[in-house]
Length: 55
Length: 227
Length: 248
Image 1: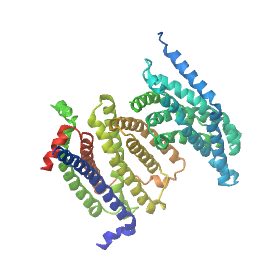
Image 2: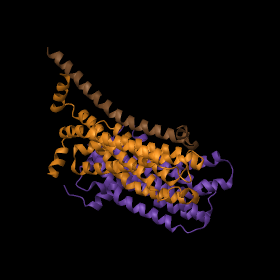
Image 3: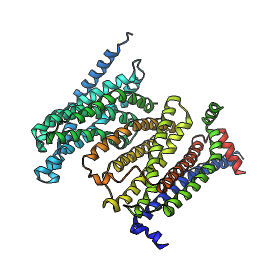
């Protein structure tokens, strides 16, 4: 098992590569999710304000 | 109102731009001065190693040419954009790409051609052997129009923006790289004494290609920027 | 039937709905192929004769590089369609692809560096592929920068479409000129790096990873497109109604 992690001595190059890939993949999924959430809550907030003003 | 033929419109626009540039001729020297100054900085920075200076010489001249071209690009459409004449050109009955070509030609005559003329001086500054100077000048006369043509697309896309200049460099420099590579390779090959037909042919191909394609792209970009 | 499908997809509202249904499928496919590809690549495939275990970076680096180019082509084609036919959805696809494309390009460069250090001894080498990839990254960054600098989203999308087209014409030129520039100085030992023949046990995980990344791109571009759609269409009735629905 530790042999696997050592990657023949190249661990310091191999694992950061995979870690970077993980970060990039996660970031590109999270970003659009947050953008969509942000716009929806923004619109909802404006709706609430408009409704309050109507009363 | 009588309508102009396309050739008359072209030469009229060309003449207008040249006259306007001539009226600000003090400013015309700037790109050329920049070119010389930047080139002169390199040996000062590198040290007085003659062989090293010759080795980097072609690269230095061409990088300086790229930077000088970048600096001067803004003036291509700036004043016309500011006073509204650019919109008038877009409304013309003539194909915008031809009018754009006239503007690019004027711009090159004013900013690119001087670089070509002053090149022998720079060759001396950078220890480039006299045998390679004709090649250097050839690369400049073939390459600087390409810089103006490709640059015009970038300027057209950024002319309406506030911080256009910074983005312009980012947009245009990657596109300049092929010109840089083949031009410097031509000069380096000439210094060694080997024939440079391959590199010069490719530069010529780039010139013809951009001559055909760039005006259309620039016209489309102007239409978008002004919309 | 197919033409009707494309017509309908041109409408942001319909696209939003269909994309929402497709995304889970893409994500599932991506995860399955990712796990399978990595398992095969890391555990089953043998170490390389010359490079030992460090070659395994290839399972990230090569698919990432392929994606960086694939996405740019998708962007350019979408850009062309939006310029010629003025379709909103293709404009949105252009800008939805830019960040993912730039990310993959960056990933290719970074993993290329990490692969290069043990192989060539330095973090950066001006080899033809890395240099072309670096210029590709600049092209992507230019697109992102131009888009964020223009306030009107529709004008921004069209400007960026032109830039993408100009870029795609230049990419082969840039690649060829960098190859030329590189072969002048490159010792032969480094070009042996990419031998065209690869053992099946290595090739299959590699291709699996390539498919995996493509499915990932499918999911992400649809997600980004949906976010862009509601951003642009926020004042339209269907978006307002949708928000009302969610608020209940």
